[in-house]
Length: 513
Image (cartoon, rainbow, N blue to C red; front, top):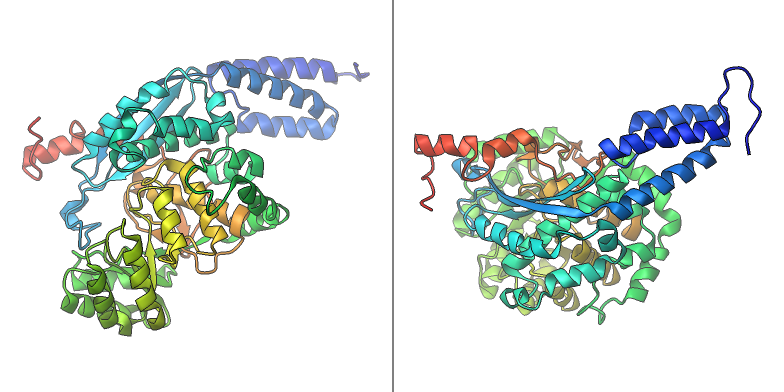
């Protein structure tokens, strides 16, 4: 049907055809999505010609569908990226005394000039092993169509984690699972960039059926089944719009560990406490576990600086035996810590349960999860009552898909999730997951906080933004995982410019092979 036109007026049919030609050209040379300027232009046209939207929508949907069908993954690159954080004791704790915050950084490239970026967090030495694992696993990805992956994401995830020979050096744990996380995170970043949405918004906009289709429920159906997951998500649908509006206005509450690294001097700790109080933080975490006398002094110093009206948490980073953890924390109970984090081995489910039972009467909870190997360990921790606070890590278990399973189990068993962050890219990633949890699953921030450490954010194109101790929702497409080109030139190991400078100056020894 062609409408009548006055002088200078474009017919609906003519507008649709010309728009399709421009859209096709832009898609071929740049991205298959309509850019922001075109959207604004079209919105003004639609106000004047309301029926035009029907033609435009049909054209755009057809074009995007065509591009998606034709898109293939043509290359997977992986880089070893390291930052010399050990020089200033940033990140130091009782177990990891000299970390150089690092990551295996994956770039998934397609034939349509759109890429996805993902990573898994490491501490320096050993990153090269994860890089090699990513390269080995890339053979299972290159040549696939992203659309086929996303349409049956759970099946793809299982194929990646269950390759009949590679799984022998896991399964679903250790180096292979760290590599899985880097690759899966890159795929979710790719999907969000295709949809031109930040990841949290992509997750929020997925229907319960779409979201559940991304999760492999193998080994966890004794806690939550697919049907139960669907019911949990469907029950929250009507409140999502209101929650999203609240999130966009207020953000999501954060706590800081920046004041508490074990290698910091007393002067620096006091300065940082004052700084973060001024920034609006009301919750602080300190590292403990090497020396009880020193822990007592440092916790007293922090309490003196922040007062007892603020929240204090402590983190032992797996250093203690079970009985030692109980005895040590009884000595620190006078400082009223909200939780003790990682008091013992991350694999010791019954040990965590024993510690939690002993410390709850003192008002001290147990938090762990950043080093839990997979959803099965999380399942057992939750079943055993070993956790008061569940700490997912966006780079430890197998990426977004497996983390969603943990969120669902925690919801079912009524345990709050407080993500671990702070390492390279972790703050950038976990914010998306926790924001989805608030909008689509739990609808509350009670007893829930996201960890914040002010390190390495300057190296990302879309860094985490914290205002008044709240993470503000990202607005740019993706998982906030893309490094700046300049940062890669400086910190790819060992060829980066900064690393070459430090080798030359004797700050770090050059690698021997």
